[in-house]
Image (cartoon, rainbow, N blue to C red; front, side, top):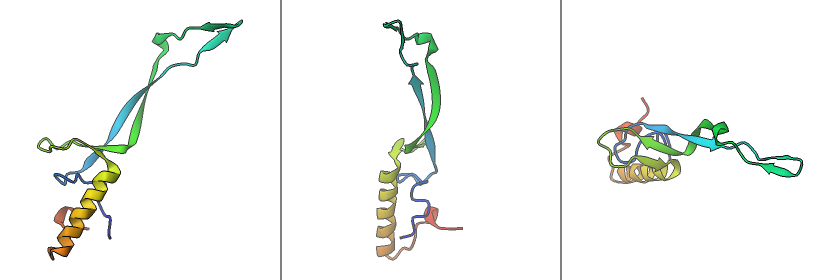
Length: 98
């Protein structure tokens, strides 16, 4: 099966999905000074903006589904493409190559 756009498009509205960014707070490691554990300073908390690879977001305002596991979304799209092919309707328009 041609998997073209099965991950990129929302399985509910067929609009393009966008990457989810996650702000991870990373505390500095605890330090020992002469056998005494120094308390972490909460002011030193850093936030790293990282892309969450497994989760995608649909930004279309009328879409009921907002967040998707990328593999689940692709599997649903593939099932719908298979159903369309079996019915003799061909490949759905959003998933066709230009």
